Length: 460
Ligand SMILES: Cc1cc2nc3c(=O)[nH]c(=O)nc-3n(C[C@H](O)[C@H](O)[C@H](O)COP(=O)(O)OP(=O)(O)OC[C@H]3O[C@@H](n4cnc5c(N)ncnc54)[C@H](O)[C@@H]3O)c2cc1C
Ligand SMILES: NC(=O)c1ccc[n+]([C@@H]2O[C@H](COP(=O)([O-])OP(=O)(O)OC[C@H]3O[C@@H](n4cnc5c(N)ncnc54)[C@H](OP(=O)(O)O)[C@@H]3O)[C@@H](O)[C@H]2O)c1
Image (cartoon, rainbow, N blue to C red; front, side):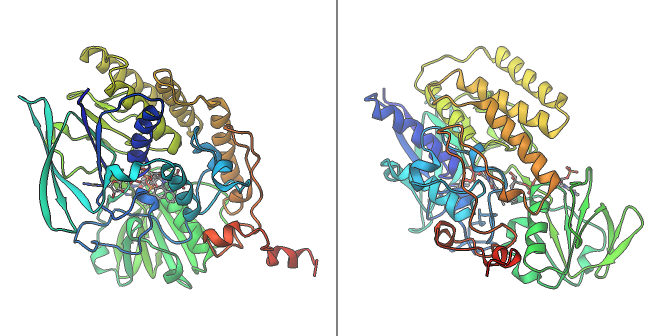
């Protein structure tokens, strides 16, 4: 077998692809020639935090949208790798909602066990892809940013793992061009510190609005107002956070809302989501979708239907993350290795249609969890990705949704039990609201005592 596989991106999805091949190689089976290209200088994708915004050292758009004080917004037990547990990595139980650096450490722990780094060329950006009909191969043009050199490579299969939470969706509101305070998109948010004592307006009502709002509240913003277009987040907000309908327009630093109210603000943060953006792909290979659970045109959420040598990973909206990328990568691997044949294009179209209709029929967040659970269950029937109890993970997601509804400020203090090795999470030494240091060092420091908690109970 002389197949050549190109992987674009070394975030959790690209790394899952490398891991899938590596696990095959470990069994003594021959694997294709693999090359992975990553535009940043390290792996981890979103989890590789950068202080930079705008463009990077080499003038490329910054990929990262994560920020200081970012903690997992779902229980880690829902995203755990089935072949590398948190207990195996940390050697001790940890809490259910670790901060970014801890999760980054976990992602790296698994991949460092392998020789995957040798397959990755860092500081290298995919610039353009052509499908060469006569060769039945992709020609990909790359820029080696560090050496300012352009080169091309040919691949039989191309795996796109470039993520889809990086290019801001930035709508216009009348009068915003005259707003006197600061304006940014969540993609450029790097921490709450600059909003201390400020009245801030967040536009959007999904995870970024919820989390950035709560962060800014926690770190000392004077007030947080969240403006929704379709549905309010509608949880029990503390005094200081309010939800209002959509902004109609701005006049100076004053925002006007659909319910007729208005307020002056110091800053606006657009939490209006992201665009699926593939500037390196021609029109006929580009995935065109909004952020949803079953994007059109990709069979089993992975294989591009118009050209099945093109593979997409991680393009769905995400309840499940790391273990979903794994099941997709295992599926893609076995498909590329010829372990199963794809049905005809018509059959594939029907299958895509079936899943898209099922998503349309899913109404509530719990339905969406069930949908993604069913999707992963289906993918797992094709591969030997280690089985895990998906029903229990779905139940954890539903419990997490309830926890958030009950208390947005304390849900991260709850603990869950791993379905991979039955380890019960430890309570973190400090409640999330009192924890202002998100470093790995402090997180793992077992001797730390939550002094604010102790003072409340008069132990000293
Ligand atoms: C603010 C924020 C918070 C999040 N918090 C959580 C959380 O708490 N828990 C959770 O499970 N998930 C969270 N996520 C979801 C997160 O996107 C996934 O966990 C995961 O990072 C997706 O992996 P990926 O590899 O598909 O994409 P990414 O992590 O985005 O990685 C894509 C990689 O492709 C590279 N790349 C892009 N274009 C090119 C190119 N042209 N050439 C070469 N390389 C390229 C990028 O540099 C990047 O390294 C969060 C996302 C955001 C935006
Ligand atoms: N770890 C963490 O704590 C954390 C923090 C932040 C983000 N994240 C992750 O980041 C990812 C992206 O989340 P996201 O919230 O940025 O994006 P998202 O889930 O796609 O939500 C986009 C939001 O923008 C709104 N919107 C879009 N266009 C609009 C417009 N023209 N006017 C007004 N509102 C508009 C949408 O409203 P409609 O409902 O009306 O469409 C929706 O509320 C998720 O996977 C999330 O889990 C995690």
